[in-house]
Image 1: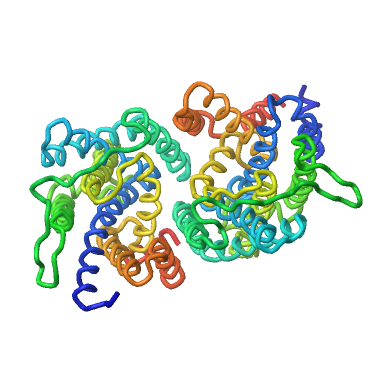
Image 2 (image 1 turned 135 degrees about the vertical axis):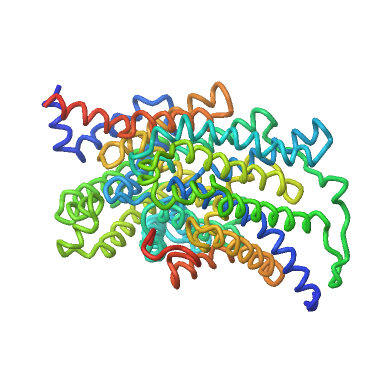
Length: 316
Length: 293
């Protein structure tokens, strides 16, 4: 048991991908599986900042939303091919991350959360009012991806199973990227900043630049999640930019276990499955999810995966 | 539309009335933060609960003044329970946890109001005594909005007297300076924190009752209000009461003047104001340098 656990932790990217390969078979329907995949990626990007760097942002919906909208706008208004639109969406999310991050890292602690929330709302209102380009309150409609062509291979994007695996390919790439960052010396600096930023500064690391770089990387990952979500939904709802969605990333991250590699996916899975199950019985799912979240904050702050890791380490 | 000086002046007064509500909200937030270093993410939800309970009491008794007194007490009691059973176990565990918890709480409160009053919200009405408009010399202005400014002034004055002139206020101020020393001096600081959290949420509830006749009352009304009150607190300086009042009024005025000249940019303007303040003075108007930034 313990050896298996260690094996999974050592080959974390392969383990996640292997699990996600068989994941659709375990879920009742594919839309939920795709949703978990996308929100899992969103939470992974968020976790890079919150879990590993210790910065609690409430503005990450802005990056998901910018990724979605720019991908959608490029395809609907610009007629771009899907892959170029995704690249544009991710790049713009990165630029948004640079702008918001530049202002937000001037503050610390709880202030940071408030400021990122408010700055994220700027993006929300800007897209809300730019109705000509974004569709305003109704969201952006008419993103059409009938098929995805990769190197002569034509994949039917309307088939949910194919769609799942195409999106998984991108998610796998992003996970490998995140894993590489965390395993690198830079990853160690990130965690040093979280543990004690003054000592990190005394060791000669530029704390502000490290924070900003992580912020941008995190925005890029969230932007990718957004871009893929635009392809998946074929519309971009205006709620994609709202801070309540940032709050969902926060909740998923904590439910699964912040600062752990698998946590965000576990959290996204639990959150969305819970939402899905509860809505069968009552439309007031937010109360149940909010209650469960409060329970975790009070009694299991390390989250599901984090608690498991702690227990395993104690056994050893 | 021609912009005349009197129109501008009227819009300015409208801004002050709007800013009065912002100021009240920010005072509640700042009070709790200054004392407990907790950012109450459920502040908007308490505001929303205040609006609902206020309308409920008004419907029950037909008396606005009765509801104006009773609602803050009920919302304050809700705050007391929140602090005692939900926030208190989290002290000493890192500043992010109370924030996360109150965010979860806001979801529960939103749904609770949906269950109790329906998802559509309630129709709000101005109390009969305060209907109509008065001539300010620059034009006619709604009586109720003048009352809003007046009520806020009363609350601010009362709070100031409480903090500066009473013995308990002295303890509160001492506690926000150094809780540890207060404990050594034999003050039950946990009880002071409880009371302060209660007062903060009561003020949020009060601003909800006061704001109800001027906007749509629905379970989601607190969501945007929370973001806006964060803007006010950041601009004014976290934990500073004069900062909260000044920034509240400024944000209200900026909002209402922008909606005169460029209605589409009104919501955006206050967030841009915050970004500018962050660039030039990260700690806000009255915030202590180095405390948070």
